[in-house]
Length: 506
Image (cartoon, rainbow, N blue to C red; front, side, top):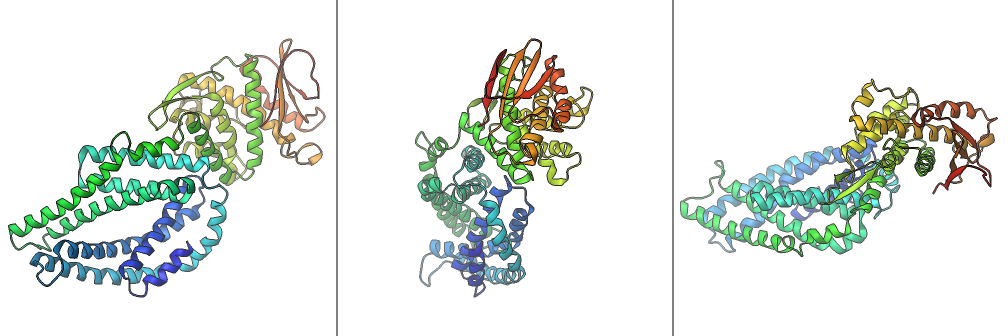
């Protein structure tokens, strides 16, 4: 972002080709970084920053096109005074348009809000620093860009149209800048190839633009058919050469597409990266994300304990579906992951106020773009589970549950029951602790069966604490799901009697 301000001063001196190119590159890098951060951080400053540079970027784009066209015309027509009439006419047209574009660019550069931009250079880096470069979140983001670019690659090879090659160039450019901004290790290995591919496809686009301009009615550069055919052959020869270079690197068993995909997440790694993506998003939004993390730990401990005791038999513990992961293979995504995601995101609605925040959390999760590795069903299920972590009990006639497919409704209720109790347990013993003291230890919880009751033992619980009333109310839904009483007790150093499953949060 600081580089943008430096390049603005350089460009203002006369808008020469190099200065215009460097300013556009600096703006594009900032805009692409904002694109990446907007996927995980909903703060409006990223969108504002991207929008701030858009008008200047576009004005410089038209100017840059004219400068590039001039370079191509001079290269294709040859040096000397014996240039053909078509080249002379094209150069005159391009130079006249360049002068007009410089006037527009100068005006837009003067309207560029540098004071606001400097302010963002102080605030946005702190937000970006919350996620370490090279992390699973950014690998997941790069995989999304790879998937989109690869689809455009297949489309371009199939249609071979000018538009498809141009769209492919944009897709590869987005992938390149994602790698450059967020994955330094991969960029060290892939950067040169990505730059070459972007340049090669950029030159294909330049040649297409030059031909379109040359045959436009307001230019009419060619005095006769022979001149038109000669220029068309020149442009086609250069274009075919560059597409051949692209195919050499990107088609076949040894293509760079395969090399890049092999490093990006797949299988269990993809599932973990998708969960990291949801966790990071919740961390940016939730005003007390430490609480949500502890609730997630407690919820998973409770879920695992009930599953190991064969108490969850509705499918909430065992059901898994095969869904595409975006990388050409299938994966299993079970209800445990849905519960974890719902627990991590259940309080994001608090960002807009405490009252009825569970409803806002539901809508915010619904509005998320589905991460690769997750199905739309999984995300909808997580939203419903988060919706019922507090407040009204889930009712089969309410719209929230009716949106789900029939088999998923009982799963949502069971997972919501687990989350509701886990949330109540942490409200007293995780965030505030006994006697108002914070508790930073990993949650500890055990589940056991004693006669006709389910006993949940939690470290730090006291029947004499006021929170015991809230916990008693929160366990009601779980008792309804399990069809037997749920008793909450203090977890001691040694627990005797009954069949027990115990774990410590990690």
